[in-house]
Amino acid sequence: MAGMEDDRSAGRPRDASIDERALTVARELLVEMGWEGLSMRLIAARSGVSRSSLDRRWPSKAELVLHVILGATPDLTPFAGTDRTGWVDWVARGSRELFTRPEVRAAVPGLLLAMAESPDLRRRIWSEFSGPAVALFVGTQPGDAPDAADAADATDAERDARALLAMGVGAALLLTTVAVEDDTEALHARIVDILTTAVASLERTR
Image (tube, rainbow, N blue to C red; front, side, top):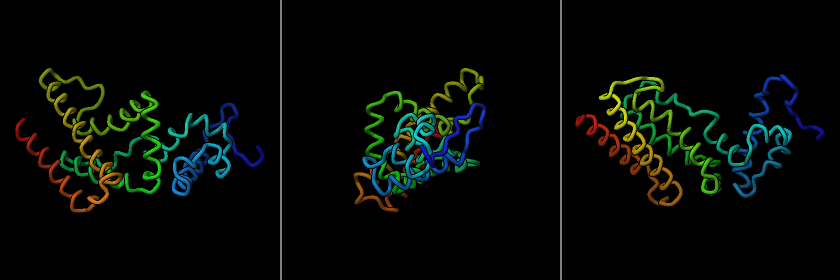
């Protein structure tokens, strides 16, 4: 199609500007039209990126929107140099920041439906979202070979991290979508207090 840009030439490096334009337009359209109004065809038309180029990068609208929201890889910068209390604080605060973004508010209902219809997508998203954060909480990296005692401690820590993620992320999602009357700074601060107190208690008992 005239005016559309592509990067299909053999051996041609992937054009990052195509990704940037497509994601920017998708973000704008989500806010303007919501999940139902958003389509790959409309993103292609407004961004000037060919539909085939979009399809090679993102096989579905859900995949593209998840990239808009979460990025290509998890941003772990806020966790750098923090202890477990700082980890919990960022999970709670970062989740609230995420779910209050207008494009995320517009996308959440459709994404939940898309994940319900695609168990593979749901499992992959949770794995990619939770895996790096859990590894930081545990303090181990893939490939480590702890002894039996360390392995047991790591298993407990991983379970704790997943529970804390579920509580922190789940609370932010509930408050920003359902219990909006309670979506206040004071209540979010109280959630952080409760979770960090729980982490401190776990640390003392181990």
